[in-house]
Length: 206
Image (tube, rainbow, N blue to C red; front, side):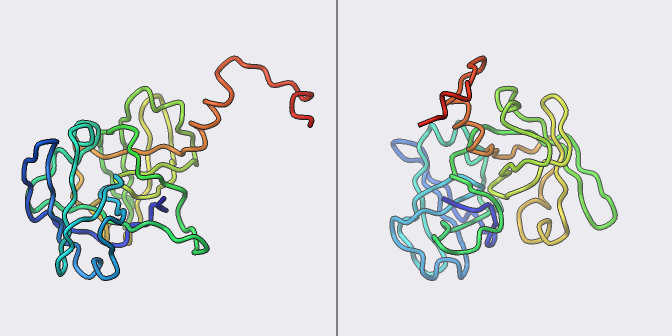
C-alpha cells in the first residue's frame, strides 16, 4: 500500500528482455538505503518487487501483462521514473490510499501554465470515468492528485511547483502516456452494490 507521495525520481539504467517480459535496472540514489530484497516499491505508480539491490541500484522483473497495461513498457534507458516505498502503519497519510495496481493508461491532452503552477488535462479510458469525481483523488504515475475539473472522459489536475520539480511531471508533453489508478473506494462500492440495486434502510439493521 502506498500514499501517492513520491519520494524521489529514479533513472532507468538498463532494460533487458526475459522469458516472461523485461528486467529493469533503476538507479534510485540513496533511496536504496533500507530497501529490502523482495520488498515492494512503486515505479510510476506500479507496484513492483525490488531485487538484486547493489549500491544505488535495484532491478525488478516486469511481466508482459504489466508492460501491456502500464506505461512501463514505453520506458527507455535514461527515462525518469517516480519512486515510492510502501507506507508504514501509524505514519502520516499525506496523499490517499494507493494500491500500486494501475487501472489504465491516460494520455495528456494539454499542459497550461498559470503563474508558477501548471494545469494538466488528461484523457482517460472510458471505462474509468465512472470512478472519477470532481475534487476526488486520482493517482497519476503514482502521484496523489485532486481532480479539479471533470467533463466526459477528460479531467484536469493542478500541479504546484514542488510537485512539478521533484517528480517526472516536468517531462510530460501532449500525447504522453500516464499510469492511472482510481480511488479504490468507488470500485469496492460498485462490487458490493451493483448499478440499479436498491438499498432499503431495513437491510442495514442487525
